[in-house]
Image 1 (cartoon, rainbow, N blue to C red):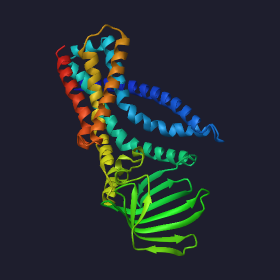
Image 2 (cartoon, one colour; image 1 turned 60 degrees about the vertical axis):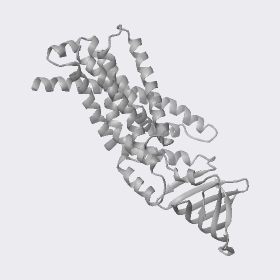
Image 3 (cartoon, helix red, strand yellow; image 1 turned 180 degrees about the vertical axis):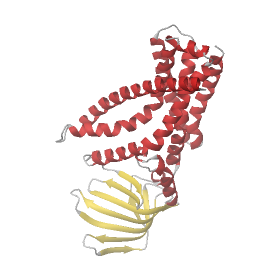
Image 4 (cartoon, rainbow, N blue to C red; image 1 turned 30 degrees about the vertical axis):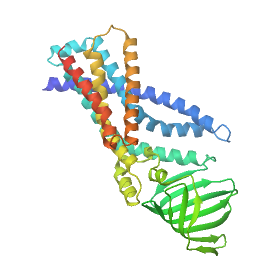
Length: 363
């Protein structure tokens, strides 16, 4: 029992060390690439170099989350290749361990890492992304169109050739925005008038208002119409029902609250539910990456050439990326359910890995 514990601890720590090294490499690469992007964004503005550096440090941890499965795949290939070339695998087999036992130890380790990330680190990265968007958004003067769902309802910003319009509605009911207010400003952001309506049918880009009231900049009612009025917008029902903020700003612990809020206000919860299932599947997706790396290194015999494994890793990352993208597209077009579109790529990888592990365990 003690011997088994010592071996498991040794393999886990060795694997974690390799993962940490790969995280540092990807963090540095992500930081440098994003730094150039931030400098390019601020090139026409008067800024201090510290600002792009700080913004890059804020956003890179979130980017690592999206790259983490591939980091685990590369770490797994490097780990198994290392113990294979040093004949540690042979020593482990002599001690009574099978290839499956060698593979499953890093697998359990990444499940723990995955759970730790989504429960502890994810809230921190979400807060950093939110701060990043707030700081960068204050310098973005080209946001002519903006839409967001908040606790206070739905807010839309639209810019025309003559006016800037701010639209607010309490909630969405069927094809109608309820308790609608439109605040009109000139191009110098001077308030012109406010339009209020009991509801607006937004089934098309030509919104149809019901019970319209127009109030000037002095608070006087200049028009009160019971008949219908129209408004030309760039948003329709389909666009508004799919509105969502940057999902990276929402932590794991707040996803259910966001889903309940969207349901109460009549908005689509598909993207938020997809984020929930993607987060729940994250530790198992990492496990599938370890299993896949174990199959490639311990299940197949290639010539002792690192370039072969580099090529395998690159091709595998590309295939997994397109598999996830293809599955997500099927979910967005409702060819598959949201849940299935998230879990299907991982299930395919698990099936392939399981077959490979059975083969590898016989060696």
